[in-house]
Amino acid sequence: MPIQIKTGDITKEAVCAIVNAANSSCMGGGGVDGAIHRAGGPEILEECKRIRREELPEGLPTGQAVATSAGRMNARYVIHTVGPVWGRCGRPDQCDRQLADAYRNSLLLARRLGCRSIAFPAISTGIYGFPAERAAKIAWQTVQEYLRDDPEMEVIFVFHSERSRRIFEDTIEPSE
Ligand code: ADP
Image (cartoon, rainbow, N blue to C red; front, side, top):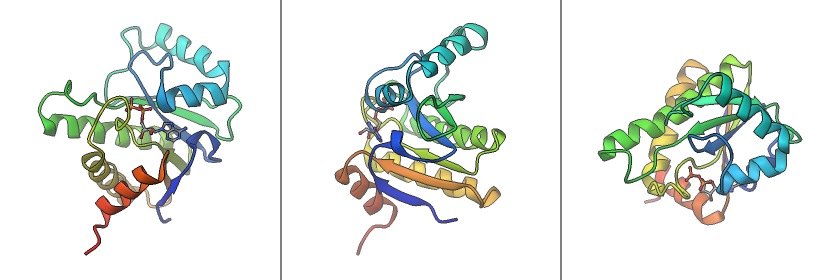
């Protein structure tokens, strides 16, 4: 199953799981997180509150993932994961590991939920300030590694702008 790379609004994707670049509170926020809660409706926040109360009183640690329903969106689940905040994740290689964890744990959770398709935003590259090229390499490598074990999973990278999609494509396949 080839990986798809597109520009658009991830909330419109008709996939089994949409990944949310959440924060550790899991209670919504700006960027793609705000867009997902707006598109999905209040049901998502209600489930997030229950998860916080019953399973994650301290919040969702960086690199981990939890699932809720997708409310009114054309997806079955939202997988909320927390990417590293650039500048607050320690040495660059530690930041890289945390970002890879966010992608890998989202994929593993999607598989546990029985999903065969998943859409990712560019985790950590917005408000969290992770350099886009560096994030692209990690996202691509982590997904490729995962697909060696589970080649049937359909993975879609959704970029919010042409510019960020181009940075991603130029990084994973540099032109001569
Ligand atoms: P983070 O806090 O992890 O950096 P952000 O939401 O600030 O998360 O940004 C992550 C990426 O998601 C950014 O590249 C941003 O442009 C992109 N983004 C914002 N809204 C959407 C959307 N509706 N669909 C897809 N990507 C989006």
